[in-house]
Image (tube, rainbow, N blue to C red; front, side, top):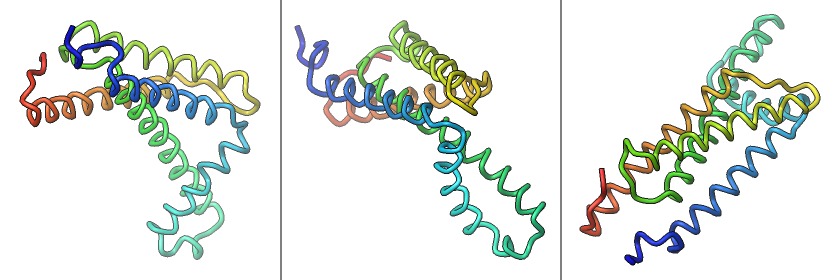
Length: 167
């Protein structure tokens, strides 16, 4: 059996561990109640507002609140997308070399989709949080992006090491 195709080669083990750690990170973020979650995203929101809006402090309170709500929503959705991009990348690298349009890729995406669903269901039981279908779609889009990035990484790695990549 080839070493690079082995189910237990070192890179796949490392990416498997990273996949689990990413899932734990997502779970921990989902455990935050609404106040804790707002504080987490609020600090990033404040930094973005400071960087983008020079006249924010001179605006009326209602304008500030409107801007803060819009920016915080974008920050939250970007956080969903990016953390699931990481999950998709790590899970895809754990799955190893395979065809882009094959069962392995479909199962990797399905795995990420099901984890996104479980994440939103989990949030239904956290005070002040809600499970949202739109977040599942954003999460799955992030996972797909991570899977596609992993294929570019595998392609580049295969070319650099003169190995064939199944596409």
